[in-house]
Amino acid sequence: MHLLAYVDPGTGALIWQSIVGACVGVVFYFKTTRKWLCGLLARLLGRRPKTKTAVSAVGGKVEGDRC
Amino acid sequence: MEKSVLRVVGAGKVSEFDGFLKTRLAREGLESKRLVSTRRLGDGEVAARRESSILEAILLERPDGAVFEHERIPFASYAHEWPPEMLWEAGRLTLELGRSALAEGYGLKDATPRNILFRGSQPVFIDMLSFERRDPADPVWKPYGQFIRTFLLPLLANRRWGLRLGDVFSSRRDGLEPEEVYRMCGPLERFSPGILPLVSLPVWLGRKAGCQETIYQARPLANAEKARYVVESVFSRLGRALRRLEPPARGKSAWSDYMAGQSYEGPALAAKERFTKEALEQFRPSRVLDAGANTGHFSAMAAQAGAAVVAVDADPVCVGQIWRRARAERLDILPLVVDLARPSPALGWRNRECASFLERASRGFDGVLMLALAHHLLVTERIPLEQIVAMASQLTTSLLLIEYVGPEDAMFRRLTHGREALHAGLTERVFSEACAAHFEIVRSLVLPGTQRKMYCLKRRGAD
Image (cartoon, rainbow over all chains, first blue to last red; front, side, top):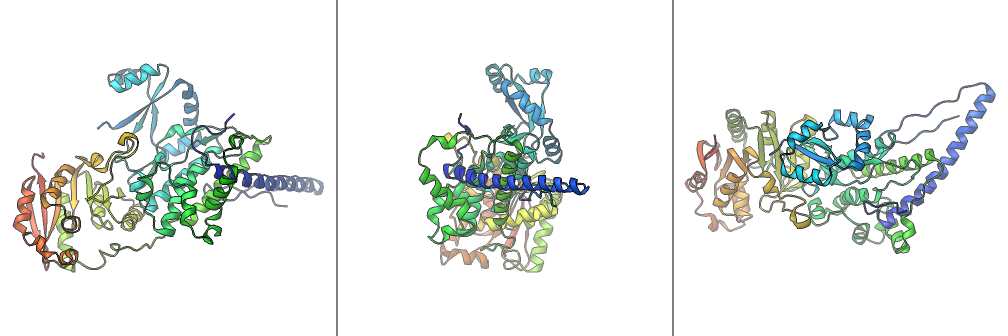
């Protein structure tokens, strides 16, 4: 199935987006793992884990949980 | 002209579109007017409108389609007429809507300035069918490349090399290709932080990839949360790139300091302002074109008098200043980069995609200001006076405020560059006679201490 049937994705731009996306995916993996570990630690120590902060519409960072 | 625009949505897309209109993004966007007003017509309303032959023809092709009504934005404009500030703002709105749509399970299927019109100084997203349901496992934002080509690269080229947006968009439908910008860069420049991710890397990767079709195949992720995280990061990066390309507030050009300097002493300017204000109060135009608006001093006056103003000037820096002021003071002014000596032509396939400026402006205003403009058209552009007045009569249905600048005026002499003999015959009488061919002279005023005279004219045949 072709992904992009409407706008011209720009071959190089699409590849670059995919490469960066793969790297960001690795970051997501580590953030998820850290979040899981923090949650486990908090449960073991009898504390409530903290929650995520909000994301702004243009350029804001997603802040993950902090132990 | 009809006050609304009708859109027929095919049966296959109606439920998706209806679903989008129920989302929080759509409700808030419609309320804040960032999205063009949209309303589905009932069967009775559709039946009443079917007298229109165009609607009838479309509904015959799409018998199960639904009809939606949008407001008509008063004056359509295009990216080739926008100053960089307005392109930037259109890009900001595009990213904001694209990102907000993710939370609702929707996405934008394209990201181009053609999705945006301006209501005064406010961008309005008009192509509502650009929103579509997205695959939650899809980690790619499809219009990423188009956003870079049509927003970021033109802004970058304008900022770095002074490439005018009019030159970009009047000859290219889809913005600047990275290859084009790559060729504009020097060898070291291609490695700079602003150029590398937007230009150089896509060019190198694109050349290496060649024509492999596998690149375009979908690669959904197993984890939808991860896919969302990746797409959000795309918007974050594009947002940062856009912020770095924000046009500077204090741009300078040949004409950006005109009002602060040169051609008017205090009493002359005050007299001109008073004359203009009195004419606006007498005629109360609802739609004003300020031709040769410079930094919008008189555009603001017309807007404060209650008119919806379109302000045009050939200088993008001046037009950008008008836009900033209109935004800051909430004035109903749409500023556009248009050189009246060669106004925007009709563009696109068969010259029908973008109407020419004169086609959109013709008889579209009940008040036109041509203050300190006619002598520029006469001297620099060598347009005959009769043609200038004829064009003014094409633009306005009623009021024309026009300023006569005599050959003895300092600015006039500056423009002639030794060609004074060409304009030796220009006198107030000649100017008045040229105006009288199309207009009645309501009143006039010589500006004190100058060779300039203001004319308040009413188009012959106007109510």
